[in-house]
Amino acid sequence: MTRRVSIHHEWTRPYEILTYDRRSLLALELLWREVSRGTRAIPDSVVVHPTQRESDGVMSEMRDELDREVTMALLASFEALFRTDFLDRVRGRLKDPASRDLRALHRGKGDRPDMDSILDVWKSHSSRPQRISRLKQYFDRRHWLAHGRYYVHKSGRQPSPQDVREVGRQVLEDLPNFPRLRP
Image (cartoon, rainbow, N blue to C red; front, side):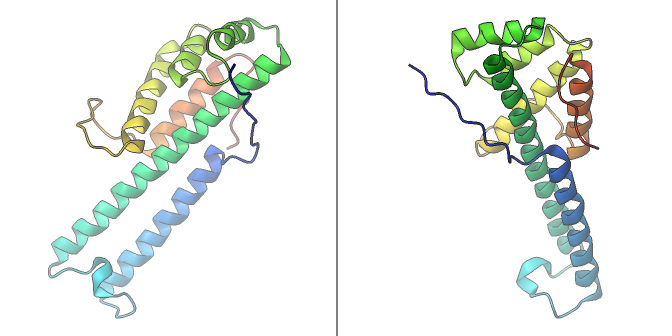
């Protein structure tokens, strides 16, 4: 017997994560401005290195890491959106075609099917299934990020947080009777 999942409705939404990203980028900019001025308010061990080029490299690494963290958080938020919708449809016994297919998935895999299975159901109901394929690639990237990045990731370039948000928004707009994102 599988345990019933309780939904925590206070999970972080994509727009909240993007707000965090904007604020963090501003903080990084301000930090870099202070480092460039040579202010003593920032300890040398934080970002200052013997050459300007090395300091620039540290700041670039910080920006890249922030992008990875925000990308992972955004994808986790999209996963929460899909999973809560899945459970709402299953428990509410909604009658639309997508809900019926999601209930069939639930009968086979319970309250916690893998994300690919949920997205595959939606792919069959999407007006643009190639967008869901792109989102699935991003979820694969999230898996790589979440599990330590110890292997070479096959998918190529790192999507920006804006790429992830835009594809997620497009996917949700394509799906029938799916909750929309806030701006």
